[in-house]
Every structure is written in C-alpha cells, then in structure tokens.
Image (cartoon, rainbow, N blue to C red; front, side, top):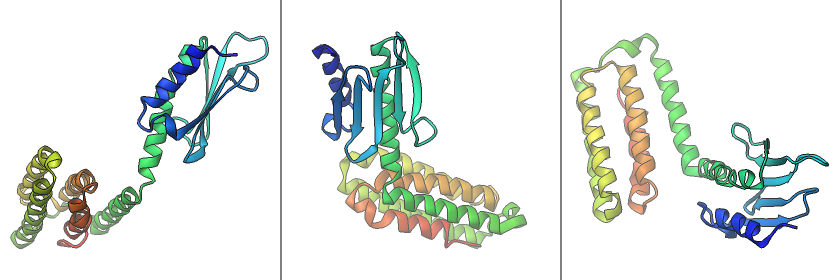
Amino acid sequence: MLRAAAKQAVFNLLDESYFGASNFTVEYGEGSPFWVNIAFIPNQNFRFVLKRASLGSSLYETSEAPGVKLLKADLHMATTFEDCINRVPSWVNRIKEEVIDANPINRELQAVRKQLEERIDGLAERQEEYFTNAEAAFLAEKLNEFAAKLDTVSTANADLEAVVKGLKERIDELVSASQQVNKGTWLRMAGSRLLNATKAVIGSKEGREFALEAAKRVLLEGPK
C-alpha cells in the first residue's frame, strides 16, 4: 500500500497543473495491476497508469495516454516511484494541447490556414509576382481596418493592451512588406501574423466579434 505522503505528492502535482485536481480521478492499488491510475474526467481515454514493470522486477512502468506523438499510450520505464510521478506534469500538458486544439475556434483557424495554402498554391508561377500599387493600397486599407479594430479591443480590455501593441507593430510591417516582397512570400507572412493576432484576441468578447472575419477578408478575399 502506498504511503499517504506518496498519495499527497500525486495530488499536489495534479492540483498545481493547468486543470487542477478536480478534473482527474485517482485510484491507488498494490502494484498489480497498478500503483496509481489517473484518469482525466472529461475524456477517460486520457490516462496515466503507474505499475510494477513485471513480477519480481524492481523497475516501475508508466502508461501515458496521450503519448508524445500519438493519442495511444506511450510506455516508459523508471527505477524509482518519484521518477514516474514526476512525468505527470508533461502528461497533463499533452492533454492541455489536445483540449485546446479541439476548440472549435482553433479548428476554424486551421481551416483558414488550409484555405490560404490552397490560395497560394493556386497562384502557381504568379507567386513570384509583386502586388501592384492599387493592390498594395487595398491591402493597406484592410490591414489598417484590422489594426483599428485591435485598438477597440485593447480599449475595452486593458489586459490585452501590451499584446495589441505588439500585434499592431507586426501589422505595420505587413503594410510595408506588401510593396517589398512577392505575393507568395507576403501571403505566408500575413497568414502567420494575422492568424496569430486573431488567436491572441479571440478569447475576448470584442475580439471574437471581428478578428476571424477580418483576417479572412485580408487573406482570402484580397488581390488575386
């Protein structure tokens, strides 16, 4: 039977994590079939199981799902119980990544990225062309509209003021770049910067109301 101190160590790692201990169930055993069995309540497929490696062995084994690269469990061997439970924070972080990536907003951002890639591919040899003065002026107008909306967000949400300042500087660089680099290069730059800007402010009510649609207008509806 595990000592109370060992159980408390497991609890502390979970409680100090992004989700807190309340989002997990924890079972304790006698080593076979497990010493510790942790499950993420919103998705029971996400589990961390610590057990004896094999009968008579002094080694410990952890089964961690999601794994580093795959959703299915990774297996890891360790010589001490402490080495095993110290793997809990990295396991929780992988769950965090899965939960955030499953957010509908993030899925929509990925869809826009894919559409942008298709648009760039569709340019074929014209990727090497430069925007005309009229096209660059159109892009500057849309980017300035985007920047003005960012000002609205920072005015309504002081916590985003510093973030918005940095984003606006990067948008100003895009305005200049529209007359300095070719279409393919610029669209890739703009995709990265505008979608990152969208992701940064979309958690606020004000950002949610405009950011994604404004980014689409620049990236998908701009000059061909």
